[in-house]
Image 1: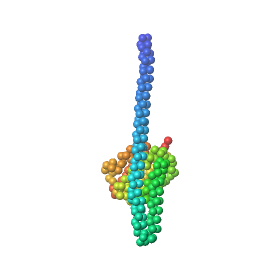
Image 2: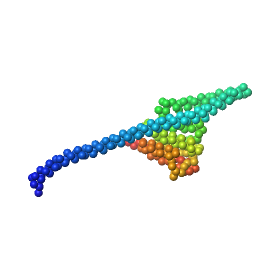
Image 3: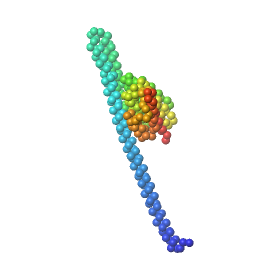
Image 4: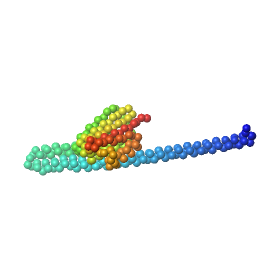
Length: 251
């Protein structure tokens, strides 16, 4: 049995322990809260950095394509028109041919101007941006393309659209420059609260056991993770490569 003195000490101990425990719990809670806030700030900063880099890379890729288009497409049309006009004194029909060629060059310039307009690029949706790339590939005769959309399109946050488009643009660039593919197929599937993108080329592919850094897989994976998307890249040597992106938009 407790003596009166022991009881008093016990009560005093409890009275001291309770506020001490409350202070300790508060400190632990506050530290965890501050750690979570720091992590959220770091993740936000990392996301904004990747977003800015993606926007810069999209512009650089667009400018690179413009350079090719000016040189290989519009430049060739204008050169042909010049040659036709130089020989028009021998054959008057060549004047009409030159006029038609110049008309084609003007149409190409208008399409090019529209595709690089800053406001136009800024306001493009993901579907419009992909279609813009495909039209450029078709104009340049780079590759035969197929673009299919199934399901009902829904609105996607613009920042996430930019990241997704940059991932696709990375795949497109690799297909055009390195894969030796003749076909590029893009299929976008809108499911309930989920977006699924399948992109396939029939190029030379690569060995899955090789180092993928050369084709930008590391950047693609990093960016997919930033927006909570799942990314897989499957390839078979001499048969082609498929990129699959899945993003849930469940609230």
